[in-house]
Image 1 (cartoon, helix red, strand yellow):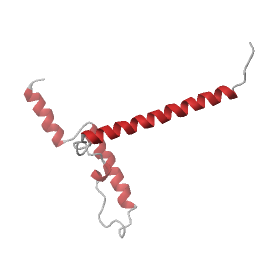
Image 2: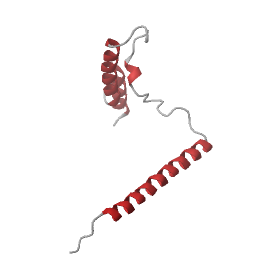
Image 3: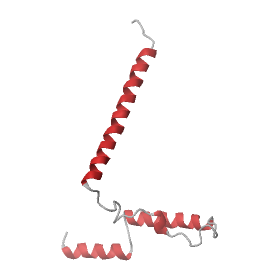
Image 4: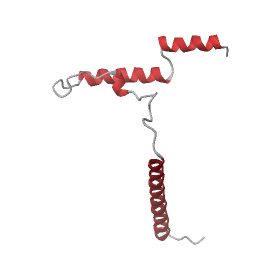
Length: 104
């Protein structure tokens, strides 16, 4: 794709969004409409906006994790996986005990 064509699409996307961002904008607008219609003005004095219901596409992950945070996260995931595997083994053993044996 030539550079001028890319720039045309880039500018067009900023004038009239399309793709995933436009889908989020449409959905966020509908959600904000419904939330504002049913909003308690005393509890929520300022109206909701479409962006309140949209993911932050450009800063989705927030601050980078430190090495220690990544290590702790991975250790936690491993512990969860080990617990799931252990539970599955117990279920398999239990179902093997309960299954009726058929003589063929």
